[in-house]
Length: 394
Ligand SMILES: [Fe+2]
Image 1 (tube, rainbow, N blue to C red):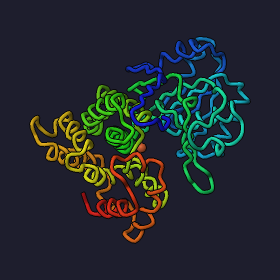
Image 2: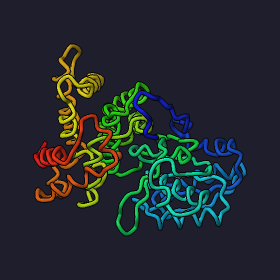
Image 3: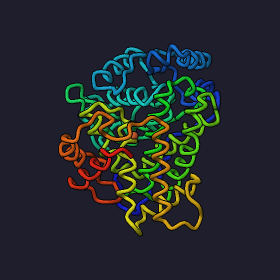
Image 4: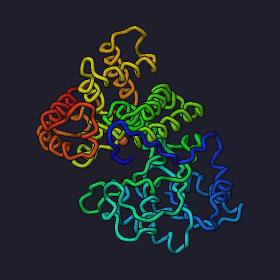
């Protein structure tokens, strides 16, 4: 998570990962091992309607843990959402947070936990390593395969006025346990599967080449990419395929672990301004930028080019012995095919952006935290080039 000096490896030991079909049913046992008696279950009405929240509650009550339900999670939670959830946790005298749902449920639980245990306001924790006191344990249970928030030490909470997303990064924020149950992801709408899957894929690809990457993060990035590239089409064609769902869920979590070590890069730096200015959904915004960023980073003879070549080979998109330059190009082509299949807009114009907004988008991208980790320097001119390239249909 933290910006370590290059060459220094710090392997995060959290979260404990519990993966497999039906593992939601283990939540009672896992929570009991934490020695808590009262839990706040943080989720949204869709997850309650799907029956997942009720099942979790039943398992927890069976082992004697009192459960209070907070089902007010909204997408892109802001500081007001987090304050409501904190109040619910205080009223329930919670000793454990459970975030059940998409990234928003996990982030809301993280933010509320932060305020409950450390006081103050989210703005106080915006940045790296600003959490002084220990937090309550958190069990994260994703129902989408995308953000990887269940494996990350970051809480992303928006300012309700400016809509600026504040990233609070501290190891104390990390979940104690992540339960990865593929069965929970089957009921999500096809569009959610597509855009969250593309986000996870982009996490694997960006973390594979950043300046912060190391041998451990590369292991996570490579494993994540193999699982995600091999299963994305399958879950779109056969939404009930639990094995493919499992690969997506595990791939997204592994990509989350990769980000902990190596951060992200240019596609995320470009995506956030597209979301802020034109309301493009995060996964679509990252996806629409991805081929341009892959091509920009694949400088002949660079380490990024050879990493891309390795990934293309692992996906079966290139063959052994192919020159790195050719193999890296097949990676961008293969990713473009996946983006087409996932219904990601073919250009930033198709996504709703305009050509005359490019200078403003580029200026905003230079201020993004992730830009500094991209393997190739990104200045204003480079960002203009990336947006201009992404304005052409891929
Ligand atoms: Fe992302």
